[in-house]
Image 1 (cartoon, rainbow, N blue to C red):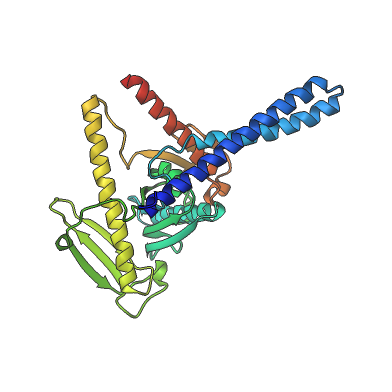
Image 2 (cartoon, rainbow, N blue to C red):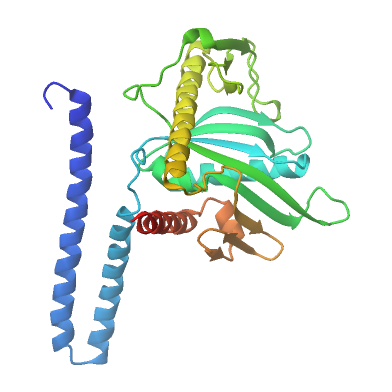
Length: 333
């Protein structure tokens, strides 16, 4: 601990987190014991009604404590790199990708997290739409919360771009990766990286710089598939390159992790469902509902959801994920 300050910091953070869990448990345990005694001596309906209200408060605290068990991933406390891409469909899909971009930014704001824009490419025919966006969300459990949002999101609505008011279906993909810090070794040969610089421009032609501050990194690394990372948020070319390099490290790490999971899956003789392109949720606006196809969670307030009120959907997804892991463990044993 004395010789490794970074390790000491991690241990202290974990100790503080676990202490809060223990204190919450002890508080709930004490509240339940007190309520049990009070229920036994309660004589009137009014007294019992007051105790029922207190019990509901304890139940809420218990639900919050239960949610702690849903975060068991190694990188749950890391920042989350969120990438949003429209599917086929031109203007419709670009507009839908822009709506999702706003939804996740609003969720981060509601949750007290910070959003750092890395890159965004606007769409000329959809004023609020995007053809690509990438941002880093920083905050407590950022990756742990957002990682269940990876996949394809489907929108069904009467299109505002269709003069005949026809119903359209649009798709956009969300990719969530943990930001990998320097403590985790990721081998990158500088000779495998090509750096391009160019003038940056924000969505819809905003924030145009007059200098070549935007950076594009193209990584070959001896594989047939190139990895391309861009960053044009800051006015400093050096800082944009540093940010882009962080994303590249995270992408390479995520690729190696995926390979490892696939190998484990083959060894167990099972098929791992790690397709990033699987459809996970439908937003049907003309019928006023949103349904998550994994957890079967259904909501009938799409406006609130698209304004960032997605915490309930996220926790339903985390519960589904935890159940999937438990089922896998049972199958293996």
